[in-house]
Length: 113
Length: 166
Image (cartoon, rainbow over all chains, first blue to last red):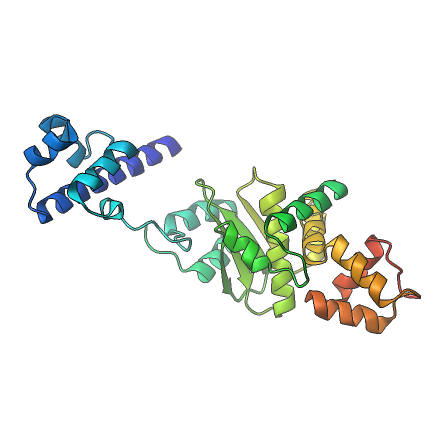
């Protein structure tokens, strides 16, 4: 159950990063072919990265930023700040201690996950 | 265990270059990305909640005094550092309830005392202050300097065998 949730989160993140790569590439007016040639990868591989089908590693991501001359942060969603306690977290905690979960929720006002 | 706690606190103080009282417990929490938030509560002084990814959260009772809240942060940091395998700790306002729940609460209290009133700092201060024994005024002064309650300071001095008040 835990692993399923983690897998799902990883998959979503992969898609999100892929989508951002595509957005940056289009914004800069570069075709997939143009990028793939300079990255020395197949166009299909780039497409898989952009659809979040496969993982992109740190080195490839760095090269991509260098080729597109963009900021590497452009490829990532905002890192959740430390106040990112979600309602789901509180629900999990409530199974252990309902009263304390109310206190936690009041203190951190979690966002919907 | 008591010695281990003292040692662990010393490591933390060294790591963050903390050399003087009052010890900034908020800063230590910040260094560990532990976020702190407050809410009123009839029942709880505080709690520590750790997510699966290790991110930790400390909730404090906003109704309690700043000195008490500071102690609670130090206490929750105790759980954070001493008890890494448990995801949450709840601390009741009624301290008897806490202590009855077993050694982890006592350990966290020890940690809090050691962190807020580090042994080395106190030994130095006491030596400089009162070669002929501490008076109540001294305890008051030290409590203010370390930003802790006078009760907490008295206990700590006794535990360190630093001249209980004559």
